[in-house]
Image (cartoon, rainbow, N blue to C red; front, side):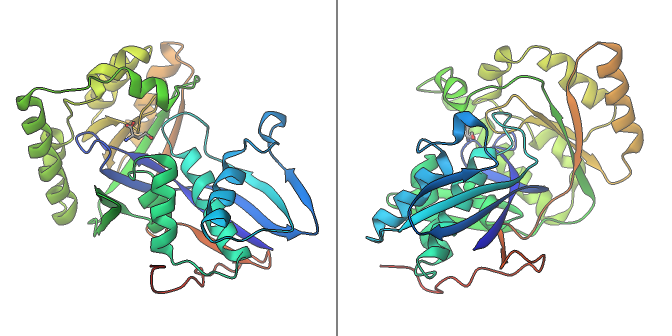
Length: 312
Ligand code: HSE
């Protein structure tokens, strides 16, 4: 039996559509064991306690790639702290945990890099999967059949506030509203800002985020799907946030704030209450570790004992 803890993640981070992502100290925890026969789900809602469950499907993809046939499986959702369909990477936690659980059951025959590649194939884009596996802020690029990634050494001095709506937004709907082509000037707008943003995170020049953390590729198409988006976004900025971005495909708005932030958070909470906007405010900091295992169900965390080299 193995327990797996996977962090929440925020993709895009403004200008880095399908490229930038960051992991936070908010986690879903799963438990996996190979049993004599059948498939058992525990801790999941009724609607997810079947073979359409994304954790189960991810495990089976991994088993099939390695020609491994499990006798039976028990999949338990031990703790669910990340709200679903809010742009905080909850489905990536299912995929990453499922792959790590499957690999453990097979005797850890695949490396983390192999699992990462399979995870990206399943999700279709790497920006949540990469920080969920590796922690921190990660840049990922799909290059033909490979996925290249690089973790950024983020300088201290900032924190994040997730302002989480009381409604869901499906990623597939939020991708459908995007254009198939964009103007050259919009492409340049994002390339320049994504680059500035990475440099600001690398050397701690967080005053640059007000220029860097802006987007012209997806937020303007998606924000009309989110009631009160502009109101909340503008309030975060006027309260003193360094910048804001739509977390993943939304609907969560992520504010980046300096470490001394209590007044800003208080202001945002008061505003939501006064306006009767029933959104949840969660203060987050960066998780630099990524997915972890708890072998034998103890609380002692260990790194996965995966192969060091990739499966050819
Ligand atoms: N980059 C993806 C998108 C993240 O914005 O559609 C969704 O999880």
